[in-house]
Image (cartoon, rainbow, N blue to C red; front, side, top):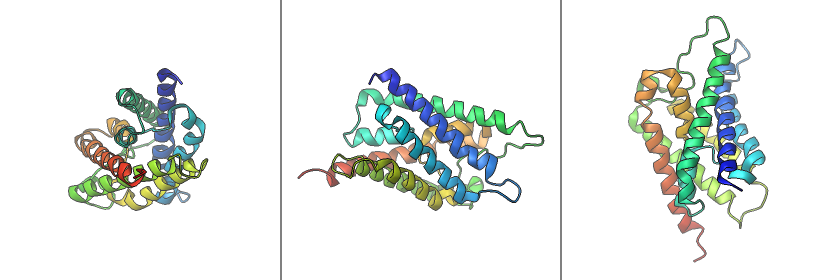
Length: 230
């Protein structure tokens, strides 16, 4: 598969993740008395990854996330030459997804952008959690996400079930961490909506790059140890 095709697949997949996951939070989570709540949002994020894993996994690997690309590289499962192009495609796809979401959301009279499904800590944490709690949460949740991905896609694992494990894993991660950071574990997802939420989201965006990448890098190296044939 050519790199160009892989990048288009990553663009489309990340577009869907942001539109579907963040869209569920912005458009449906608090809709009158029929809102899906944070459980529904958690499931929506998991479903975006599950559906795209089946749709484009055989084309690009369905990373949809700079931290995943870096984690797979650190685990010896992804070429270093493709990491930066993948990240660019993912961020671009996420921004376009957030743009489409913004155009839909602002089509309703009286819509207020608010946090626009952005990630935050302190005053911008859904549960009022501080910087250290947010940092730990994002590192640990991304670490576990990469362990799930690396293990489920290992050639020694049961074949054909990886998208289910990964999608459910992301759902569980959201169920745990939405109250803390509104759940990132994905710098592309965080960047895309932060651009629309404004100054506070952009000023806190550094954490949602640093922590997921750190957790993913650590997971890749732990994976090398756990799944080595020695």
